[in-house]
Length: 348
Image 1 (tube, rainbow, N blue to C red):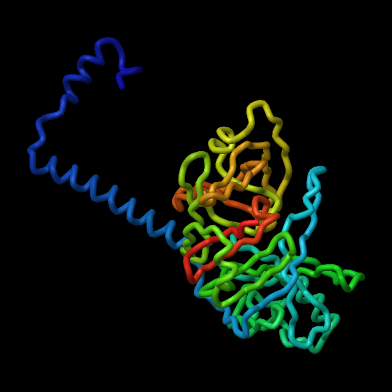
Image 2: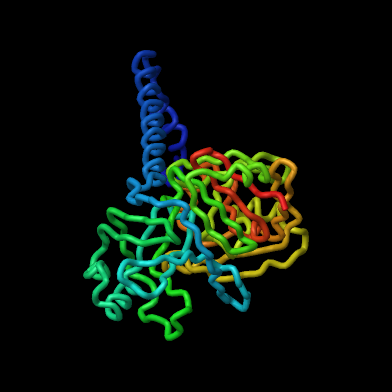
């Protein structure tokens, strides 16, 4: 504070700036004002982060259940790493369209979206389709599709300017037109048989299947599938994200380091997150999930670098221990019983 004021100035400055006693009442007001500001900032931050987690109202109406189909795996290769199970693709039928289209099933997305470029390609090939002009808009209204015999109608869906621009020459090749989010699960139950690639959305879990399953609590807060499971000897809340199929568990760097097998090399791969390329690091792990008496080895654990501040804050604010992908369950049948607030793994 006294640097550059000259010899002796420090003593003079100290004398001149010695604070006079502040009366208790003004001091109390100052302290109270600071505390009030901190509380107000904390409350404001809480509600800001809560709004970031809050999805728009559910626009999907699902009828004529069960909606049962055979899903497809989307394969991918990134940075030399073969990923045969990069995404779960659910086949859908559109009114007036002879071609089967696909939606990527992503429980990490709290609402479904469509992709503008595939819609435009479909419209060019089949001019009679009922969603004329949707590809040029940011919203498609009264959009209908079928999953097996189940019928889904969306009052409106967001349309993102992404996706394939041309239909594949092979009419049996999956043509992805959007994302099927967790909104399709609201009030329902989903039986996902990974081993036999069966997707079945039902009003309630069949009793005979429920008797074969081990269940843990499931919360569907803000249309996010949150599971309570044992991990590393602790009870953890994990988000089940079928959109992160290529990874067993995504967590933060500290947990990643703690769970890694010592000395094991990390595999680095670039991943696309809504048009932004992020870097994922994956290492072998001996850790396993615990669901009652069922043990599910993770085999690998990953963390992603270069996530933005908003994503980091959302993760911390949620209290989640990480995001589970499909990989630990790939040889099992899982039950997401949103109505019954439980998640089950069918014993083999």
